[in-house]
Image 1 (cartoon, rainbow, N blue to C red):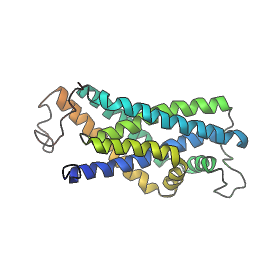
Image 2: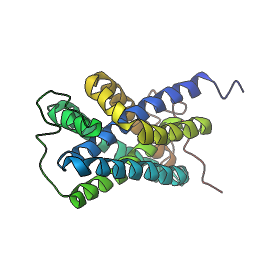
Image 3: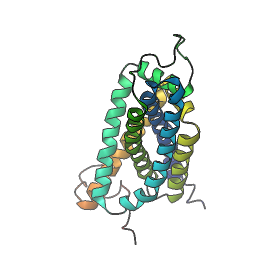
Image 4: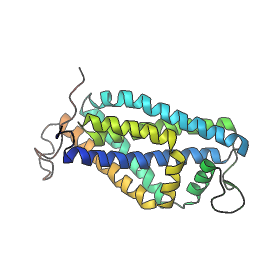
Length: 236
């Protein structure tokens, strides 16, 4: 029991919670941006489609990602590189003007938050089919990113993985708009989450490299021979 609640496991859990918060909020903002250009009467329908799709995709990816990561080092390296790309995209978004996030949050909340007399007034107009397609494509990518990051941070702590994936699904399904508004108001939360995802990505690449080419990273003082957790053993 004490091993389950070790400092290492609790640290992994803290990382997973922050990853879930940031990526659920990021996903919600993308959904809001895609739906912002729709007429008010169908905007809520598009947002609901997006949130349901993101929730279902997280359940699907949660069922297969751990098995994928257990296949060997090359999958770890690939997953880590994908998360590094996610970090780059998040960094660009955080450094860009905030008016897009405000439009997305207004669309999600259905409220005129900036008091300009309109809800998501600056968003380009689009059809429901265009918005739905944009949302589904984004949901596939971002749901996979979320599950990969959670699995990478949880490591060999299965209970942390289960809690993290369950929290990810719950946040996306029940609190997406609230989290998007929270991140828009407190930008530092997103920066902390970005740093954690970057750390997880680097760790996955290093662990995968060491699994594929044993001993190749022994020259690293913080890694060589003892610093990294082993890659998951093949399933079966």
